[in-house]
Image (cartoon, rainbow, N blue to C red; front, side):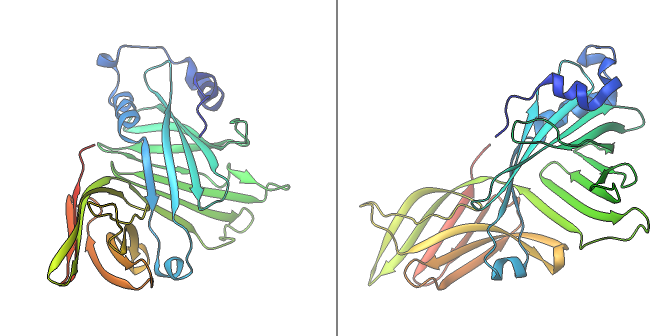
Length: 288
């Protein structure tokens, strides 16, 4: 995680915007207040959905951690986005915003090097809403490559609980896409308390309490510390080529890997469970 960035980096990314006069939060513009609220709601841990191809190929889930950068001025906000997948090295990015007018903000996007310094800077335009924002770069000005012939259209959207990041590489000369769009749909991870049971003859072995978070499988243990023989996990599943994202509870036999049962719910569900003749699992959302 990159934690040593601060106001100086925001000044470098936002340029002249950093010279805007300070004012009390109570008299700040609606756009400045929206950025203050984003500093509270956007940070957190997010897990990306996986489509059928990714699941069948065994691709590990993609995670992103969002942290707020300190800012010395009302009307500015900065965030680091740290992305990781499996055992691969993390990738770090910075998104900075400064309040404008008419529900908008100006800002920048920058990938960061290993020391946490921006490697490249692209301007971004943001539309601010009650619960989030939508931002994008302009491929004409966000260019990469030795001849600067490749443009990047990057879109970032946040609605209060879900984060979408999309990338399109564009040939500057023709305007054509150079590859398939990369779209990642992230859902904020939340923790559940759970119980589980497995029938053995005429009685049940129970795991009366455990905690579970999406993307982190676990094996319930009974009162004696013995495994119940199955693994429980939650995953974010992409349906119909991204038209819908769902939370899925999977219960899998620990020895054979066979799926014992599955249950579906909305990603913001407060409870879900599985009830089979010999296996039962119940989950309830823990307060933040």
